[in-house]
Every structure is written in structure tokens, then in C-alpha cells.
Length: 285
Length: 268
Image (cartoon, rainbow over all chains, first blue to last red; front, side):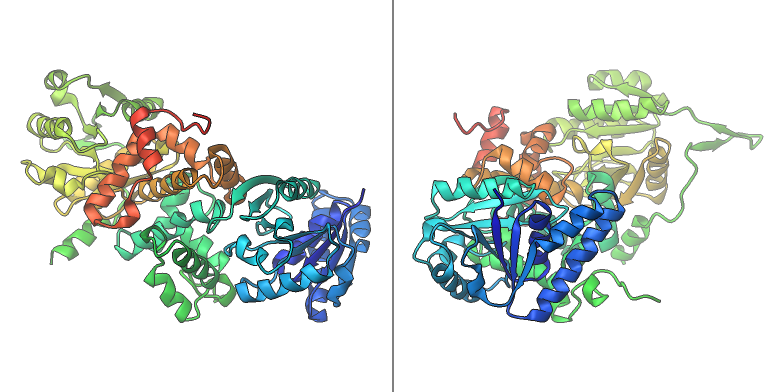
């Protein structure tokens, strides 16, 4: 049976989820307040699928069929028939709670309400609804069509049935799942934190340079990317705010202490690749 | 002033030839036959021994200090690979320094105690250099070295050349506990065990998640087991000692695993 998936927020993550859902024969209602955002989002999905066709990963026909399954929605009430609604808007608790309150009113009474948050509390978001047992975390990784993992996050009041159904849906989307408790950073963002924070700490102690730390981590640890290259790619603004948020949520535990070096880069507007300057300079000469 | 000398030593500009050469009387260079001696942590001695022998460099695995005297004149580099800074390591280093000719480099694991601290009471401080010798890392193409403020440029060059002869690049970092890769790695493993401790997910799920979600080469808990949890704890405790910062506190379950030597089991 075809699953009907609603996606709220047509940014990078929303587009990625729509992409894999459509390819895996789900009907997709892609919602955003801004029509222009949806248009660009579908354009990006088109572009990414074209690349998969060029690499012979999917056929031209797969792509055409998938694109017909994506419906552009600018009226949130049109998500009322979805089996699951996945939220992928900005990481702001107030915004998400308001949104879930609204989704709770319009969604079908058996629908699952999932949030793609990477750093906020599922339990807190769920508290804005009358059916917290139907609210779950579904944490996808960027780029969604390439990263195999989904963290299924169990809020304090999420039901076992919701978890089982969410795992089945994630598997239908071609993902592997792990189930985690609703604690800050879940598993991946939490365990990966020292990869960034300890590298920054080593840099702050002048043990060696940015370039050397990246070279050492890749060539003596076998990691694909060095921590500073990766922070520049993620964006120092995003990476810093995740660390800061986890530091606060762990009640200022020193293990999650953010770095002044990264804070200053953020203050200077040196976010990394997207601003052409970060730990490295990406300006074309 | 000191700082300047130090930074000059740390830069490895010149890449000397792989084999270390001596000038004879008729000034025809002859190659000195390499003999590397190894002592300390059993797993590390095995890894280093295999890496050198594979590239045709003779190795002497020392069982104890008594066997050092007989071959002392033939040894061209000596490795002390005990991870923990204990009494035995101190004895080994002192014996190396007293027995081996003055030009022979002594390369010592400096993850739990700086090479400066290890060598500062010994006679020939200039020939000691620290190394990030940590189980599993020698499988990769780069070796981290840490000279102390006393380490001579000649010694750093000879050790760099020795590693080049077995196709390893080197990185020179400042002499600090944990150096770079082991320090980051131990903190990742520690956080993975805090996550187990808090029952956020099972050890297997945590390892799977890190491999799939971040493309780590190994799951952190399985990696910790390969390294030896006791070795991970030794580095973290040394970081705590050197920094007095709460960020290096060890997850209680990690400490238990280090003592019991077994993988944590949820059902137990």
C-alpha cells in the first residue's frame, strides 16, 4: 500500500526527504509557506535525481514517475490525509511547538507526527499536541538521499506502536534505523561532538595547526574528512549553535563546552564554504 | 627565546634520504644496517615489529633489559612503547639512555606523560622524541611525533627518515599528553560510553549509528575494544591530570570495562 507522506518545510532536509519518499513510491505533499521555496526545492530534487540517472542508479522512467508523486502544497490543511507528517523547519522550539499544535488539529487522528530536529527535545515538541503518543523524532542526515541512517527518537510519551510504525516507514524509505531515547544530540550528534570540540581544544592549546590536525585525523585515524574541513562544510554557525545548545541542555557539562575560536569565526561571519571563508579560505583567486 | 628554538625544531623542512648514511675515510658513503629494538606494550611491539619487518628492516623485540647489552652497539633506533607512565617505563628509558650509543634516537610513547617529563632527568635529553603509539593507528599512513624542547634536529630528522623508509609520513606536534589523534579518539570513545551509561541506545546501535551517520571507520565502542579500554582510560586519566578539567572525566562504565577487560553487556 502506498504511504502518503506530508513534509513541512521545503529546505535542504525537506527536499531530501521528499526525494527519497517519491523514489520509494510514496505520495508526497511538500508544504512550505513560501511558494518560491517549494519551486526551488523541486528544482533541486530534479537536479539530484538527474545525477542519479547519469550514474545509472535509477532509470529515466523512475525519475519521471517519482516527480509526478510530489505535490506542491502551500495550504497546510491539505496535509489532512497523510499517514505521516514530517516536520523539517528551522531549529527553533517556539516555531516547532506552534507548528505541532496546528498539525495536531489538521492531521488525521491516526497520523504520526514526526520531527526531523537534530537538537531539540521531542518530548517538549510533543507537549504542544493532544496526542503526544503519536509524536516521534525522525532524524535524517544530510544529504538525505545518500546517508543511510535515521535516528528514531522516542519521546517520554511516545507509544511503542508509534515507534514500530515509524521504523517501518523509515525502512520503506530505504533507511536503516536505530531507536534512541530523547536526550540531547540523541546518539550521532552527541558521540560526534568531541570530533569537533576536542579538535578545537587542541587548536586552542596550539598543539599544531588547523591543516595539520586535519591531515593527522585523516591519515593517522582513517577518517574521511578532518574536523576543520567538516566544520567549514557544515557551517561554523550551524556547528557552533548545535554545540552551544547541547552544552545548555546538559546543564553546562564541561564535556560539551563550545570553543572561543569557533565563536569568533561565527562573529566574523566566517561560516565556512558558504561564505567562502572559515578555517580555510575558499575564495577563488 | 626558547619558544623560537622549539618551533624551529618542530618544522620538518628537510626530508633526508631514507637510509641513514655514514661517511667513511675515503668519503664513500656506506649504508648503516638498521636495527630497531622494541620494548613495552605487547600489542604495540607486535604492530611496530610487523611494520618494520614488512619493509625489510631488522627488529629486535626485547624481552627484558638484560638482553639489551649484547646488541647495544648494533641498535640504530630504540622504541619504548609502554603506554602508562609507570616505574618500569622509567627503568627502561634510563637503561636505553645509559646503554645505547649517544647518537641513537630513543622514541617513546608519550600519550600519558610528555616526552619532556620522561626525559628531563636523563643524561642525553636531546635524543628523546615522543610518539603517538596507540593500538590500531599504525595501520594508517601517518605517524605523529612530538619532540621536547631538548630534542635535536638531527634526531628528529633521523626518526622522520626511519619512518619514511617504511613508507610512513610524519607530523610533528607540540609535546602534550594525548597528542592529536589519540586524544580526539579517546574523547569520542568516552562519549560513546557515556551514551551507553545513560541507556540512550545499545552499544551495537551506537556503533552502527556512527558508521552510517558519520562514516567513521569503526564504531567507537568496537574501536575502543580493539585499542583496549584500559589504554583509552589511561590517556583520559592523563588528560585529566594534565588539565584538571571536567571534560576529561571518564564514563564509569568505561572504567569498569577497562578493569574487567570485557565488552559491556546490557543483559548482564
